[in-house]
Image (cartoon, rainbow, N blue to C red; front, side, top):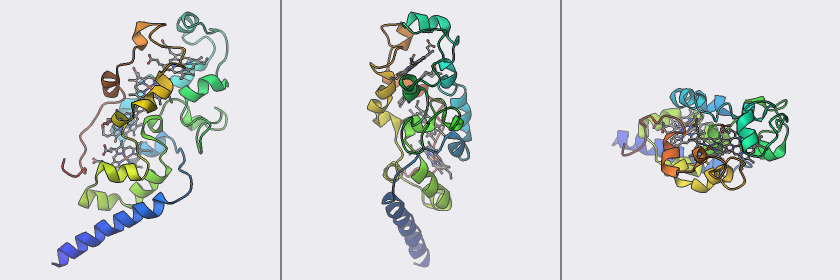
Length: 199
Ligand code: HEC
Ligand code: HEC
Ligand code: HEC
Ligand code: HEC
């Protein structure tokens, strides 16, 4: 009986922590380094994708042939161009998000939060309740309640960057074709979850 009560109290604690942080003010972007602390495997795999170094593509002379083909100026420096930054950085113009390469170099490129949502609240709760997750497990619903986005449920989020506004669409080159299922697999390698309830 004592054990059951202790377990129940632990669950209540987690639920209360959700409710408390959820009601807080604005959720901010915090950068991939914070996620790396707990998700090293995903971080390393993501680092190898073109998304991680995507900011460099805005520099003059980089990917010259591709830019010319898309009707852009290959010799122009686009690193301060708002029209490009909104898709080649993380959280551009949003709370805590990228402002400029001088001010926010840690948010250059398409990072974790580009797909998983701004992580300030999630990060806070996960840090505080790590032991509780490990002991009692969690559900995706609980993580979503503190702001985490599960990308396979949010194709519209991808299309904000991969959609019609991008200079690099299927019309420019077939390699830019959008296939949601295939893309989901190539974001970073996926590793089994340990603490998810029912896993
Ligand atoms: C203090 C540690 C910690 C930090 C920091 C952290 N996470 Fe997590 N996260 C976890 C734990 C623990 C799990 C559960 C893992 C498991 O079940 O094996 C998890 C699970 C996840 C999942 C899977 C959710 C599901 O149910 O499918 C995603 C996606 C995720 N984290 C993204 C992020 C992102 C993005 C960041 C940075 C903004 C981040 N995490 C920062 C601890 C953390
Ligand atoms: C903030 C804008 C943005 C969002 C949101 C976004 N992407 Fe992208 N994605 C890019 C950019 C920019 C590139 C190309 C990187 C480059 O070459 O500069 C890219 C490239 C990719 C690649 C190729 C990676 C590689 O190394 O071959 C995959 C796969 C991908 N995105 C999947 C997704 C999926 C799935 C989603 C939604 C869950 C998504 N993206 C959301 C901007 C975004
Ligand atoms: C609406 C979002 C969006 C905007 C705006 C945008 N890009 Fe991109 N860009 C992307 C995506 C998405 C990709 C990757 C396409 C793919 O999946 O193959 C990409 C890829 C690229 C590439 C790599 C192409 C290749 O073939 O490897 C370069 C270079 C690039 N963008 C430069 C720019 C520049 C310069 C600007 C501003 C003039 C810009 N982009 C504006 C979304 C965008
Ligand atoms: C281009 C989109 C995209 C980016 C960027 C991205 N992820 Fe993911 N992530 C996914 C997708 C897709 C899944 C699979 C889960 C789903 O959507 O159902 C996933 C799943 C996860 C999971 C669950 C376990 C696993 O391996 O599948 C964790 C943890 C995670 N991501 C952390 C991160 C971290 C940390 C970063 C940054 C270093 C990151 N993600 C960057 C799209 C992305």
